[in-house]
Length: 143
Image (cartoon, rainbow, N blue to C red):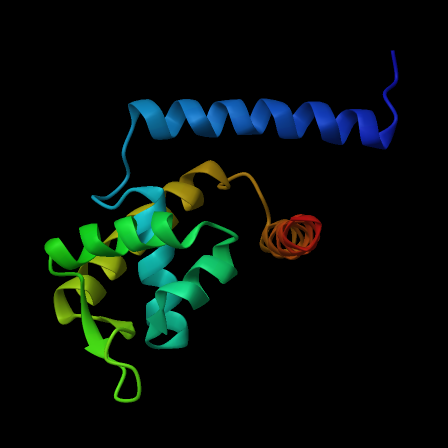
């Protein structure tokens, strides 16, 4: 039975989601969990950021980001920079250890994706990357 493109996308995304959940549950690549990886990547890519800005970026509650940031701080991956205008506010800056850990985890993750995509041509990899970005943007707008 031939599926419509939307039926195929819905089914394949559901299967992919399940498989990714299974992989992340039973196999850990690197030492950072998903939330730590994404927060460190955001701070490393865009510079220091406040908890509210990070919560807005990830569409998460401020308390969730605050908890995750505290865990990163306890591990020495980030440090707080007080806001000179508001003594209660602060931004998070990545530490050297945080940057090294992020790079190490990024390398491990990219190696894994290289293995998963070894049968894809460079053109297919480029197309997949562009389509995933477009999908992520659409999901972000729908949040």
